[in-house]
Length: 558
Image (tube, rainbow, N blue to C red):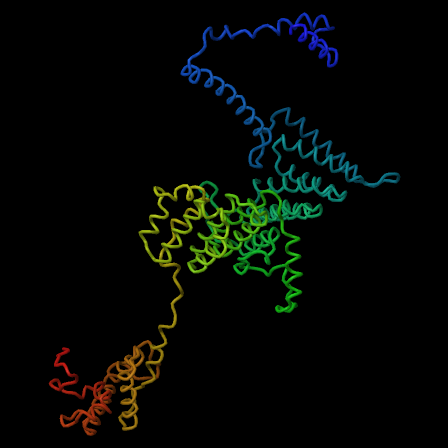
């Protein structure tokens, strides 16, 4: 067996090369390796106990390796600059030398783009020189100069159809513009413009997913200065231009014909709807749906970009637009035909946003007809949370709603997996829903001045009697208002007011009592026939006496 191992080692050294020379050297070293593996006597002489092994060795190993890996990652982060910020800069003579180098690259780039007698502009070389100059300015901490040379490099790359490189340069320039010292309006304009150029560059090579992400970033650039970066709170209402840009970015991922919440889009029509087409044309609808399916973005992790738009809209209180965006995210996840935890969270977010809008009927409908059709969603924690919220709001049970959103219950995991803005929406849900704009109650008040006080006359009194007899047959709040003096705010300027109005009303009421007495409505001799025919007017005018029986039961209603 040892002879076989030595021959195998020699053959291996002959084929792949030995470490110390020829076959003899390798064979002379091999027996040492074929010996039994020595125990680590330098560290421990006996087998360590489980307690000592778990307490000493793994701790030392994890601490040393973890610290080294953490240090390397921290160093790389400092070199690259975290979050698109400015990296550690040079100073002193090193900075002057690097600035001089960047200036040389700029001169070379400008020369490469110049036209001579025997030369033509070379955008490729100029783009490379501009990029090198931008890298040099980056080390010097010159934000504005780096941004300008990034834009120049991207323009040169676009001229030579290097769209991916151009998009990267535009994106880096937009990140620098966001953290620059410019004014807020200029920051918004530059970020929106540069991210839009990056989206156009990605679209040229068919990268619709990255193009949509750049469009979302361009829309977010219009919101610079509207949030508190320290606490993440929204300071201002979302601008209409930014809202329109976000919804357009969402449609670039998922066309509106494939979004079941497309009706909640706030601003702008869909790009897939022909306003001149016949809405009843089945062929036109089929072509529209086919075009929408072809432009549906199904790349990996595309739903995460849409989720960013959902959270941003929810933070600014744009719940209908957020519901429109979460519908697009659900459409991208449903197109994969895979049941994932992301789809369950998207369904739960749909329910929360619908309840936040105060539409519990729509939330229950989509929960039953769409969400529960996924078998995997039935066993998820998000399904239980959504069901508890819908049941509590639908039955207007405040205790059940409080129990459903309490962190001590079984919905704790589902609540912790939600985004903080959606979790805050769950905590702010109410059983009564959103308040509707009041209206319609002032109709009776406006009709009250129809019975205007006029001079004493029999026709006016008879008309007043007819209007008073109406409430006894069909009680209405409007008729009750007619028996009382109209409010001062409802009387026109040219009508009577104050003591004159009260005097006119008293004279009218006195004359009506006299007319009723002449007609015998308040007489004791009236029988059941009179009471059956004209009893309603008698009740309205107070014609019956206190001791008269109005019913079979002798009950004093006073």
